[in-house]
Length: 101
Length: 196
Image 1 (cartoon, rainbow over the protein chains, first blue to last red):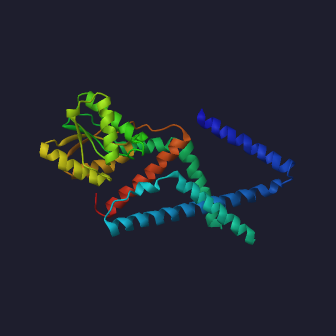
Image 2 (image 1 turned 60 degrees about the vertical axis):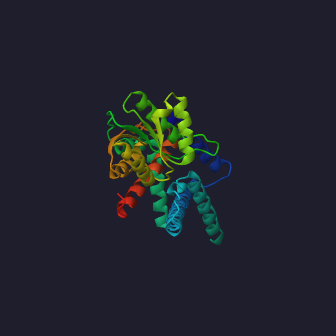
Image 3 (image 1 turned 45 degrees about the vertical axis):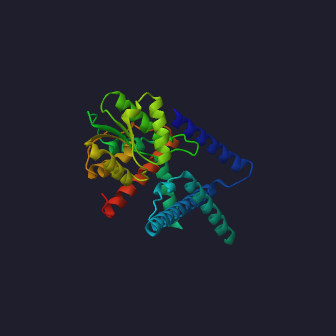
């Protein structure tokens, strides 16, 4: 039930945004596909940032362990804030690239 | 840029599957294996996540302790052994006492910050007392690695995972998938380095 509610709400607001975009802002419906592609590009960029952040984090922790002999948990990286910050990095990078087009 | 789009599409697909299907629950149950609740020498509750700075246990740490206390009260072992970081062990000790476990029946290990260290501490604490058969309490996804480490330390392990069906709301499922991915990476790392 909760799942259906979440999916239903998002579907409803997406349809509303489509209508508002087309009627109020006069956006072209034909450009929606390209926008979707660009959004996927942005998500892909976020994945790349997340993987790089994880790799750098793991290398740093394993390096610290090897150099100092002290234990630092890899679980430090298991935090949702890392994913959120990776998304932010991707968004900024994507916007930066757009200004060059 | 097509590569990024493809990666993005795969990520969105994985997100939808992880959040809105029971995949995480299925993986959780598979990793837990079968519980073997048999009379043992001790119930061992492994650490998980420690305690917050105000001494309150994390959700997972609390679940494990409650499972351990329940097994002890069912009479499956005469001892309840608590391991983990110092703060976590202290908070659990107080809670176990408050739940009616006699002080004489509770043992705590020295500070251990990883599962491997916990297995070493258990060996130091329990083998000299002749306690070899352990009911091991851990999260379902942690059980394969935890069991391997504790068996390698010289114990006979009966797994007693915490509830294995897992969460049913999207946010918790996403968290579980993240934990499963982390656990699989840890298993691969330990296998590659020969620790397991």
